Length: 430
Length: 205
Image (cartoon, rainbow over the protein chains, first blue to last red):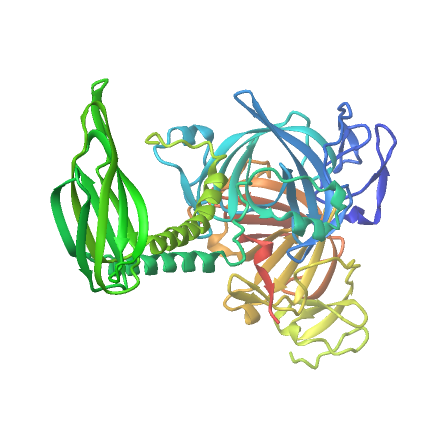
């Protein structure tokens, strides 16, 4: 707690601007937001360093703002811009130091429009202190347990202070660098930071924009747009995602079981083989099952040739039930060292017949042709089967239902994959 | 000694905490009362204790990782730029040993007094990095400063005077253990303890 809390403002000892006294008695550095001078908060605000005033980073927070997070009262006492550069790529983010009389000093960071809350913790994790060098010689992704929670290595690097304004429980000097190694669990990041000789361990969790905005009463027009998925961002399940997933898989299994039940061998009503097609063919047969479908199959002896068949089906009363055509064609060859074939010698038609009785199937080969050195089809095998099921809709239901379940399931996996996509760990086996 | 003893200054009955305290302040007149054998004597003022948000208050039981503590005494030390607080939770409430809980802007530590043969050897100088051995572990001095007692409330296990200057030194072990040394004119105390996460301090209702 600060004895200076009664003093609400001081004048910058460099530029004379009025500065709010923020934070408690452990505030070490106060950076003037007007002239950029670093003042010693523990020694009458004497000048420690003078920096050229930098433009303020974009943030919805102002110094002195207050809010309640986790039931704790916080005041925004400092703002710093931090960067990291690796292999020509640069990342920038903003951190605000928060102060609570009961819970001390914490950080609220904004990166790519995502908010995180970081606090100092005691205990470094059961696998000890990690450095980039130690990570580099590790055969497997490093793991550590902290308070019973399992954390896996996420990334390491060196961060640099680019801008500072306000009060801090340390003395933030522009260009100061600190190295860190970060581990991540399902909900938190555990970061071991080395700043000079000072070691700190910090625990970070994700805050939703809505929570932050509500907690600090932020201006909605100043809220940043969140880009991508943050490593700590929790999966947001659809309202009925679990139900949809379970129902989808249940329907798929039910449809599959029904399909297995339905697909039995159909019963052959009549089968005639090797019938010449030089003349019209007429075939009579008895149908006893009209509850299921009846399938008509024509298999020609096409070899690099095709034939068109005009078909007429007569009812037991001798009336024309249906007239239609079917084509049988089959081509094959050898090209560029590979054999190929296309088409099918067999053409089918599946019909639902109105009544049992003796039907007549009339068939005429009306046209035929050849390709290359093929032969003109001149004979057919005819087959009529009854008791044919139509499993299409069951298969359709099975696929659609399974897809619904897979989509729900894959969203979570995809989210997890995106969370870890920023990790700099590469398995050599990958 | 009974609960019916009264303040030597104003005659107000003093609380049952006197059974666990060497010293306490009168809630009515603020007089510091010292227990001297079976007698009580007045010993001045109890200082000004400015109100501030806190997780710990005299008489209110808290839970830290499954153990319950009820502070009966509170001392405030001023270190210039701020202050920190120490709360005394006596053995009769907490169990086998009385503990001190120190609070400094979100840093909470729970400590027990180290006495007799267990005491580490006092270093000649309190320079940062100085090492001491305790319980077969090496502790390194990580922080030291001077502070002045500016106020106290409730009952305390030892005498302390308003304005008394204490030098404190915090030693930490590689495993995070905490050892602290407080020295003042005419005395010193070693305490051993551990840091407490403020998020794990729960009020017991």
